[in-house]
Image (cartoon, rainbow, N blue to C red; front, side, top):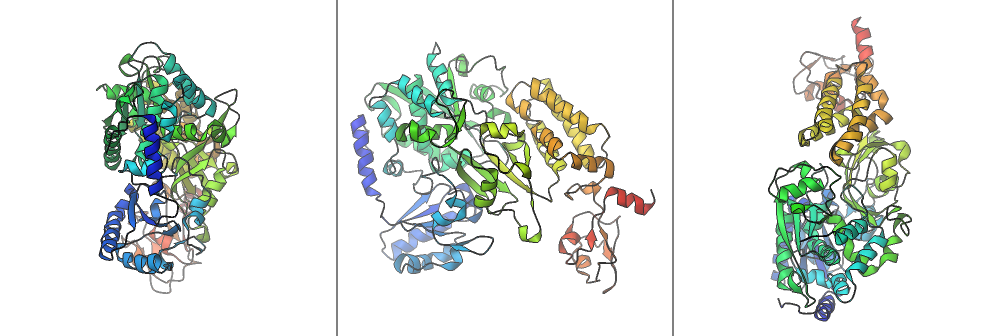
Length: 636
């Protein structure tokens, strides 16, 4: 690598590298994200490389970052045709080279098939991808994250060259402010407002931080950006540091993300070797460098001030919000913190322009940076939906489009499963019922529904989901992760947990629902940080939209979702039982007895409520009566 000495030299380098990866050049990209690697992606890459060498074929194999469609990995895409193969194994490699590469044939067994068995040959036509709008993820399936030259070839660092080549720091701040970019880490604070405040703050040095402490269960957006395109984050931080007047930055990343840590480390080293980090960058007099700080896995350290305390070597606990971190943050110096996805948006805004960026999304930010939700957002779509993974969509898309067009609809819909709710915003997010599926997905819209954008988690739930159990699960998670510094969060979550656990065990009391609601409102109004203020959302939203389920648990001793085992009593309807014996054969505790072609019965003392009998019965003879029906039968 040769150190780049000027803006003009960087622009020339980008142009040269772009020529090397022309639009019609054939190459094979293989997903090298954590999900696909766990499914054997490295073995596929090795098999491809070996076979290409053996056959003396001059075709590049690119180990990319996450393609998003994680459940279908390992993923292989052949460019420039865009032929898309999923769940590829090393044994498939000879056929791929012989049939597809040499002869242009499509291998049917490797194609994606939707729930209706429709086959798709091209990546762009697969519904999961077709209905997305990829901006931040645009390069994830095309570049090797450990080769800075691949990033150059896709126009990487062009925005940095543009900024250092003639845009003043104040003008950079103004561009970000006018773009309406809001923080993607959960709070949705206007990025330009934060940058402007930090630039104006007195004292120094000033710090620029990247929050990569992604702790929400089921969320992996930031991890996949860092694994797949770490230079986009670095470039965004460089532009931010130039605008704010910072010389030192930190990426605070979870130690549980070893691949992301490795690739960010490699990217930083390569950026330094090219002279894009360090002293006198591109000969402009601007100096900036970035260090990695690995977090120990505390959920609370995703909160901005707790994160800063952790970097300082202290216990990660939030500070009162009247102390503004842009004035007194890390080591009491002016500090600007944005999350991974926010930083990765910045180069696109600079390169493609404010007008382009504001054309995406909802609202009007021309006079008010809080006036809308602009750009795209990456969500981790998981749960009871056919297509799970990472999706990037324009702000304002409806929940229905995400679930049914991109997600492919509810899993096992042909067996009668239907949509019930979707939780957005991570463990502190609210649960939204079906009647709001056509509402736009943006910062303000989700807040009005009693949920939030959060960092981008989306969990789809079907009709077999118990909403009381959902609330209990997330409250227990948040209780364990609370730092305990403030009383509303510490004691409120403990009390909520006790009440919810009682209810799911059939020990609920008449005033429990009102008590939960009151606790939630107190926490929302008085907790110290956003974790405590939003921790009650799973409870408040489920009480608001699914109150009847709480009442069923408390008054009827009945769980509609069949998930609270203490409230379940499987019985066999003698009028429907054909005596096929399948339930008895499958019962793990031998709790079911009877004679062939006669009615079978379940011994309630031996039954462990596993639900196997309910699942295997083909005649709907295994039933779960309500608590009142059980009491009536027992004469209580």
